[in-house]
Amino acid sequence: MPVDLPGAVRRGLRGHLPRLTSPVSPPVTLKTKDAWVGRLIHWCDQQDIDLSQACIADRLQLDHALLQRIDQALEQLGWQKLAFDPRGLSRIEQMQQGAGEHKQAGASPRERRVLMRAHPGLLPGFSSAPLACQLALDWDGPSLPLNEGPGRLVAVENLDCFYAVDPAQLKQADQPAPWVIYRGDQQYRRGSSQLIKRALAAGWFCGYWGDFDLAGVQLALSEGYSHLLLPSLEWLQAKAQRGYLDERQEAVRPFLITYSQGLSAAHPLTPYLSLLLQDWRGLKQQRMVDQPCVWLALPR
Image 1: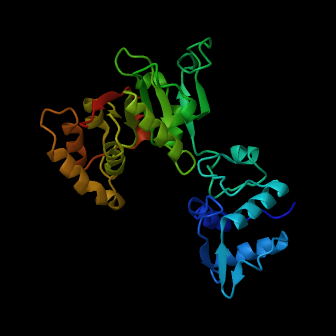
Image 2: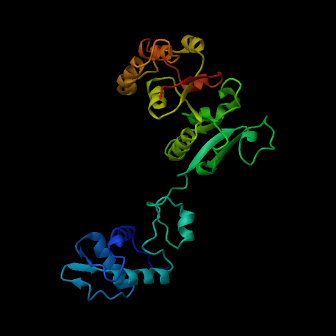
Image 3: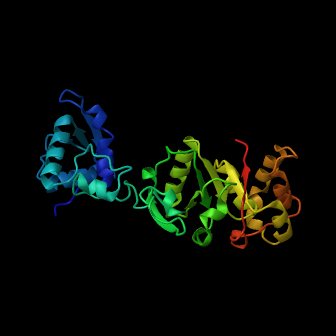
C-alpha cells in the first residue's frame, strides 16, 4: 500500500489549516530544513505532486491549492484527509474513517476502559442474573449509566484485592452493594479516573479502598474521592503494625499532617490519621480484604 503522510507531517500541516481556508488566503512560508517539511517534500515527490512553483531556494510556500492537492492524493490512496484528527479516537474508529492508524495520537485500547466487579443485577444488561454470583468485567467507562443515582462506586488500589473482595462487603449500611472498580495501573488508570469524575459530577458517592499507609491515604485525599473506606477503628487499632511506613512514603507525611490539622478532633477520620502520624502504624490492604468497611466522609 502507498505510504501515508507521516504523523509529524500531518500535525505540521494541520496546524496551518485554519489560516489556509480559501484560495485567497495568504500562503505560509515554511523552512525546508525543518525535518517535517523535508519529509513533506519527499512524500509529494513520491505522489508526483509538482512543487516547482512552491519551492523557492530554502523555502516552501504552503497555500490552499497545495493543501487541496495533498488532500486529493490522500483520498485517492485511501488515507484520511488532513483535517482528520485522530486524538481521542480508538484505532477501530480511526480505520473506519480511512486506512491510516495513528497509534501515538489516538486513544489506546484501554483509554476508556474500567475493570469492574459488581453483582450482575446492579449492572446494565444483567438485570435477570442471580445476585448470588459476581462478575469481573472489562467495561467501556463512558457507556456506564450514571443517571439512575446517586449510586455508590469504590475504587480499589491493589489488583489482587480487587479480584478477592465481595462488593457486598464494601456496601454502606443498608445500601445496595457498590460498583467496584480497579483504580488502575498504566493499563486502566485513565479510564477509572474518567469514570470517577463523571460519577462525582452526577452526585455519586465515590470511595477509595486501599493500603492504610501514608501513600494510600494520601491518594484517597488528593484525588477527589468523597469517602475513604477502612475497617472499624477498633479492629484497625488492634491489627495495625509498625514497619509499613517505609522511607519512600515519608515525602507525603507533611501533606497528611497539614490535612489532619484542618480536621476537628471529633471528625471520624482524625483517630485513623493519628494511627499513621503519631503511632507510626499501618496495614496493607491484603490484610483487610475480609473485613467490613466504614465509609468515612472526606471534607470537600
